[in-house]
Image 1 (cartoon, helix red, strand yellow):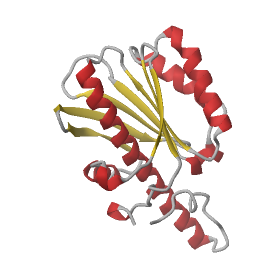
Image 2 (image 1 turned 135 degrees about the horizontal axis):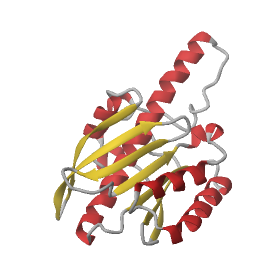
Image 3 (image 1 turned 60 degrees about the horizontal axis):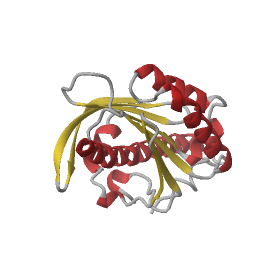
Image 4 (image 1 turned 135 degrees about the vertical axis):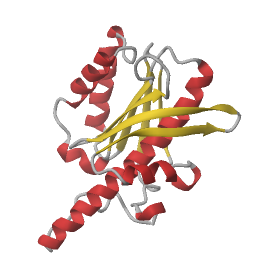
Length: 212
């Protein structure tokens, strides 16, 4: 069992895909160990909120000056969505991320890739017009060809300085893992309630949000 009684995600097939507004791209499979990623405090804040969280969290990376970030996290029907701002700084968000849990894939809207890219383009500074189509096609293809994986799509503003970018990337990864735990815990609780009403029912997330 993971911290705070949440489902363990250590054995899940989790992939993190990232861009900045200028088109730089990265992709890495993520072997997630929550005990090593400092997410417990952030997860506790999320667990106190039923469907949306707005608040501050500290970002501390060894060897890099600390950052105070502010995030708004929403639990949508098929994913978790978060916007990240540097606390007290002017301008729009410096980052955004979407967590698509594998066990919610059946609920994923057909126009997911289009809706996400359109939303990010409206925010300004996160997606440039000449990268919109490439990002859309990549997300759509990834979700189509890897249906059994949990995918995290993260976008970072191009205006972020290099030292801030390094800290932000690490903090966004921690935030995404916390969001994934949050969604799995909520879905497991909802599934338990359904099973209580219908003992023969099987919750779709039981195998994917496996308990350690």
